[in-house]
Image (cartoon, rainbow, N blue to C red; front, side):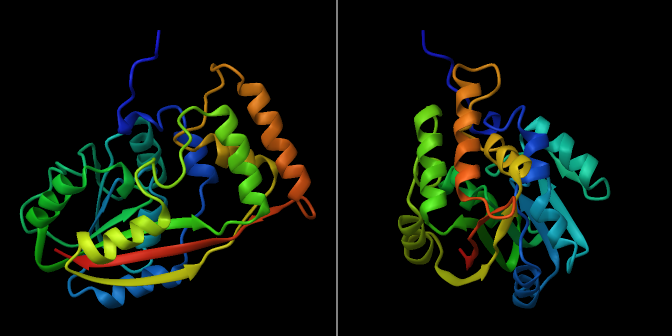
Length: 251
């Protein structure tokens, strides 16, 4: 019998602590760039997860709201950022007031959204001239990332290339630049991410597709991930070469 199909919001249940501890942050220069581009300063972080990007927003923004549908992730958010309101809405139904937001940010989450419904919701809550920023940390392909992904593909049935199986990075770029937004700016920043063994394993465990400890072959999965780390580590660290990419657009 096949297991019941999980909803998108459930993929990170039981992974929120690893997500909060072991996912990379975002460059300060990226937040400064968004600040300079925005006319108003009220921002809503949609699909906020445990608040990694939301915390970065505090560097420049003061009026911040967050929306996160997963209860485990929201619990970590509230521990991490008790001063920022985080509601249990969805990207397609945020619960935020009409025409109340100057900037919507979506970090590492857009691939989970119903794009058409989110677009309608964004248009509802944005003020005139409001904008939407779609942000990703993306890995630069190299021998290390290929070896890691090969192990994940072997053991994790939900593993998919691209973003949640929707599009490759290249396809997503075309979609956001040419189809989704009517007016878009693109920028990217270097964001290398160094991990020791515990951080590397925790980062793997935090991924939506990663199997859980109670699932078949979990121990073998972690052992093979460890072998990848040992092969590519230098002085006890592996460095994932990442780019932080931002698509800032209007509808």
